[in-house]
Structures are given as C-alpha cells and as structure tokens.
Image (cartoon, rainbow, N blue to C red; front, side, top):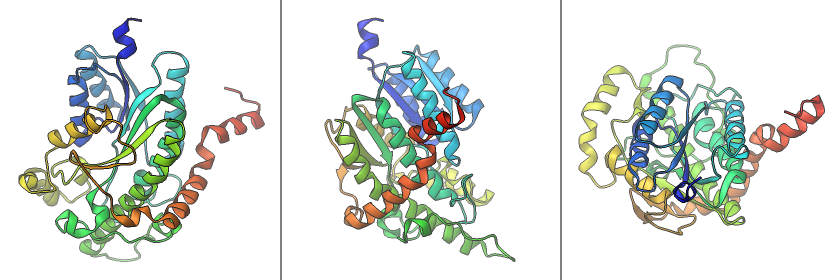
Length: 334
C-alpha cells in the first residue's frame, strides 16, 4: 500500500446511478483526492455501469446491491460493507453520502416491512443506514444526509409540493388503505406529496439526533438540501405527460433562487462531504452550498425524542446486535 493509497479517502455513496447521485459520482470521479468508492444501488445493471465508470478512470470501486424499501436488504448491505472493511479490502469510511430517496404519486404503497413506502425509504432506511454505518466510519468520518426545502412548506418548493403534516411517527409511517373504488389522480398525488414533504420534515428532525449520536465518537453529520432540481428521476412515478414536462421543460426553473441543476447541486454535496467546503461543520444545514438553518420546529426536543425512539424500535430487528443474537440462538455464527 502506497502513501497515496493511505491518504485517499474512502467514500460511500447511495443512489449513484441517476439524477443528483449520478452527478455526485461524476464529481467524485474527477476529485483530486482520487477517492476509493463504495457504491450502493438497487439496479444491478446500472450499478455495474457506475462501477465501470469509476474503474475506467483508475479508481477502485466496490458495488453493493441494496433496496431501501426493504430493511432486510439494508441490513445485508451494511453487513457487506462491514465485511469489506474487516477483510482489509477497503479502509473505514471517511465520508458517506446518503443520497438515495424516493417520491411517489400516492400514499398507498408500502415497503416490505409494511410501512408507507416514502417513509420507509426516506426515513426508516436512512436511520438504519446511519446507525449501521457509525461503527465502520473512520475516526473523523462524515455523514451527509439529504434534506429538502419541502420540509419548510409548500412556499419553499414553488408550491409544487404540499405542506408537510406532522403526526405521531406511527401515523406518518402508515399507508392509506387500498382504494375501494375510482380515485381522483389530483387527490392521490396530493397525498403522495404530503407523504414526501412529511418524510423530509421527519428526516431533518431526526438528523439532529443522528448528529448528536455521532459527535460522541468524534464523527460528524450534516444535512444537505439540494434545492429544486427538476429533470431528475425523482419524478419517474409521474404519468408520462407530466414526467415529460418535468424532464424537458421544468429544468428551465434552475435560474430561479432555490432551484439549480444536478451538476451544480451534486458538486456542492461532494464538496461538503469531503470537507472542501464548510470544513469541520457539524449538525449544519446546507442549501445548494450555502449554510442556512433548518426550520426551527425540527429542533423540537419532544418531537425528536418521540420520532427517534420509534425509529430505534422499527430498526431493532435489523441491527447487527440483533442479528448476532439471532445467529447465536440458531447456532449459526456466520
């Protein structure tokens, strides 16, 4: 191992195959630190293509399949990352960019464990990732989670997404029942938008606690708000005509304050993660490269306590400690 190998950071990125995540990957490939990469994605073909991009420019890159809609898949992915580190194949993580998220046009779908799908992907799976990655972070490791201006309310998202609706964690994680008759698309889409904005409000709220937990071991966590980035795959659940508008016309909004392009937003995210910008920042909220503040309500201690206690319970069967206990009980130590 050369000196350059030792000084090159190890960076984990979720969702590197499309949208802002693909932009983050491009910036990582061109970063002067020549990072070692660990890429987590759901689609095997797209993940292989991302790995090929990294290796084509001479970087070492490892791919791990993960489906954030399934906590068992997240658990398996964490175990695979841990195994790579324990084997000495990669060093502990200097940075983890938890970019992957989801938005849907209704609130009726569920993840594998039965929780509403948006909340599963954007909150529960993120909590499991942050919790599971802490032991494999470098001593000064840095985690970046993805916030959203939608947590502030519809005025901050150009009225494209409804206001979030805070409820108990169990209520926020509950899907609407299947429709028992015809539904209006506008009404369904409204509920999907509320689910998305609410999930981001919950994530930004939980991020304060995640940051508090990580700082106890010398690590850092910050929240990155990419701004409105039209044209990404986040809108792929839209009907065809709406997705066409999203992909082809709405990117023109990037000239407006609070909006930007995938290239610009992803560059700021990578600069934050690797300490090129805002070095040493902890529990900060960065919007398209600018240090701002999350909504004051996200600092509500009672909300934080109730939410994170619920999340801890939700992921308990999928943490390494629970897995070890289960293996001991069955006599399988592997």
